[in-house]
Image 1 (tube, rainbow, N blue to C red):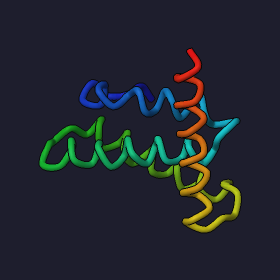
Image 2: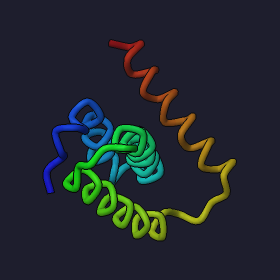
Image 3: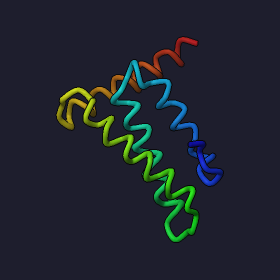
Length: 95
């Protein structure tokens, strides 16, 4: 299902998540999580069935993704995200 027009400003998080799916599944999961948090705020009080269905579908996908993530606690996930961010900035600094 294509991203509804309402969510176009947030699409960059889904694009990044797709890039990270194979190499950094935890980071990809949290990109989608951030998208969902912002999307919930955008659809609150709106009557857009397409947008609501998109959010519901993505939530379902994320539940199955979460089950496939490596077993780790919150601190380990935080560390993985922090390390990923530091690598991104290191690459940017070297360019």
